[in-house]
Image (cartoon, rainbow over all chains, first blue to last red):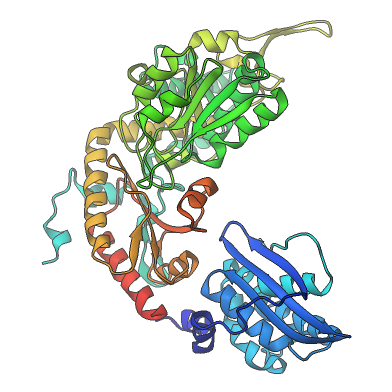
Length: 151
Length: 414
């Protein structure tokens, strides 16, 4: 297998795509829908806020391994964070997967487990897959009524 | 010796492949296996040369110059129209209108014939397997006119029953518009018999021939259709050029499409007299080099022989279907008895996008997604499929490569 492909489909990503964490609804919480119609990826992200803190995060949806793993790991990453921290994480994740050269490269060192998505920037057509759950999470934080798309 | 090596080809495949320069390249250090022909096909040297020869040797604007180059360009441009006419079996080249492709052909008919002839309460009939380009223009027309778009459903195999079409045609049906070949499923529709049904009920017939023109003999007089559209780029020709065939009597009665130069005989601020058909529908400087190169593409197909191309692609599809059916966890989407060119499938537990990415690293180009046919995906309750689609230059060994690639995908996501 090529090294780029191995970078994209790291073990952690394959593991989360096969056994997604927090795959459930949260009744009474905030939620937002994300959909990439061209791919057919769908994710509804649920957040339970306690004041300013994300007490619980979950998702329900169907998509490719990248979007499923991204959703699964996103829910783990934002749980227990403040709103501002979750939004900052969103920004850093976005820079990581888009490989924006103008941003100081940390290689995702400050992103913890989420750094496994660094290989995505080599696959421009797959960036939208990784980004969808994060944009949907942000929409849920903002109570955005319209479905989100990253296509 | 693999099964593939024992297959005989309808023509000298190695030689045909050498006509297509791009097939010699590699992708991710693997030989290119191009199986995305239903989206767009690769171009033979004859087409590439025809287009560059226009610019190198005889380029000028058409229809308006007295100088040598303009006359030469006009001759070549109109010569290509005659090639299309003969290729489609049309009675006269005035029945061939250049368009950007099939999509524009549908839109042209919807906005000219449709606006004039479709009124409140009238009906346009399509099927459940149509490409978005044979859905949306009719939706726009129906919305504007208060007409109804009716859809004949497809079966689990991806077929459309003639009886269902007959049942759906009503006295209000003005037009039946269907794909000759489904781009997502490969189903071949019996368009000749559908046209007969439409005419028996006083409706006209539009054939979306985008997928059939590159793969089989398409004869508009044999099909007895009123309109037919196709795209050059799927028929080994350039992008941005295609054609609409329409019976002369319809074209004469239809209002113009766009206004501008070339579509008029005389213009004053009080009154404009429109040009004859087909020029009435061709405002502005057209895609001159593209049209000429499209003529070269159709000549290439004629030279190779549509029957032989069809036989080759049928053999490829039969072999691919047989090999794919042996793969556990693979489900074919679209299993019509009459089917050509397209192998749409899903793999249990693996999203088509992941299939496409992994195959790409094997040098194999397939399409993943909804193939601009979302209603088809909804019908089968899936968000997307992986689709391998064959062209005249594909080999049985490439199908072996596809099958090996699919097994690799399964190992990876097991």
